[in-house]
Image 1 (spheres, rainbow, N blue to C red):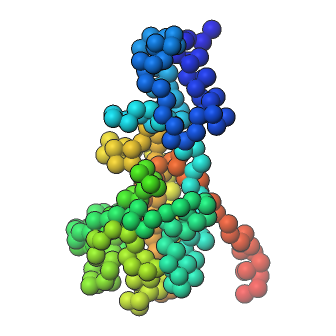
Image 2 (tube, rainbow, N blue to C red; image 1 turned 90 degrees about the vertical axis):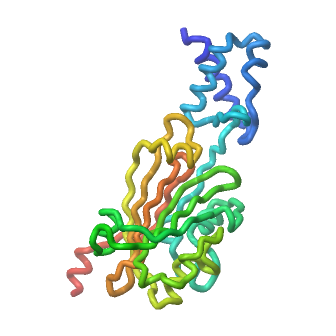
Image 3 (cartoon, rainbow, N blue to C red; image 1 turned 90 degrees about the horizontal axis):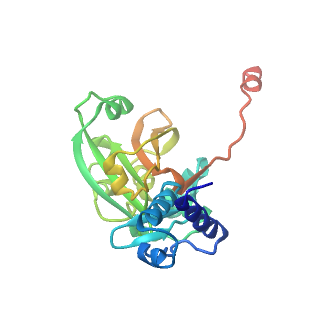
Length: 263
């Protein structure tokens, strides 16, 4: 027989999954459920903690316990970098994800800080620099409404971005078309990129910054962006709340044997 806190958690979970309790809805205060005969304070508290660990609710001081948005954002793969989006239009990558997900957005949902700093070992290796050489770091925090979705820090060689909008810390993308349009206008048209992903437990700072529920992991992204001649013009590290994204890739399947046979 399941303990009483588990029975209560399962009953509330079913209400959330069925849509009876919609995203953004507040669960009753613990005292209300105690007074309604659902169990002791420790029983209700244990049920709420279980729902939080399962990613169904978010609890915070002053806001109570709120049902989480269960529909993850569609995080596009290749198509989010389509040149027509940023070169000819104004659909920067995070906006392209929102459009593909049928979700609204505001440009100021991306904020950033810009600093000139010594390159770490991983940044230096990506750019072909020596560890400690100076780079520009453009650190962004992206939110959907009031909820953070991910951080992304891009590292640039100073000679590529000095004097451009990429070193302007104003909120929102770096002007029309964002960072890739800035590089394009500076003579550095992006041609290809590499993305590496890994899941891991968040640091305490990341948990606070991304407002992660207990037990949630993050997906760390390393993105290296090249021009046609192989020059690295951006190396970026992103940290994404794992449950807030569904990663989507659509690409042509290669046939290396056919390519070799035709050469």
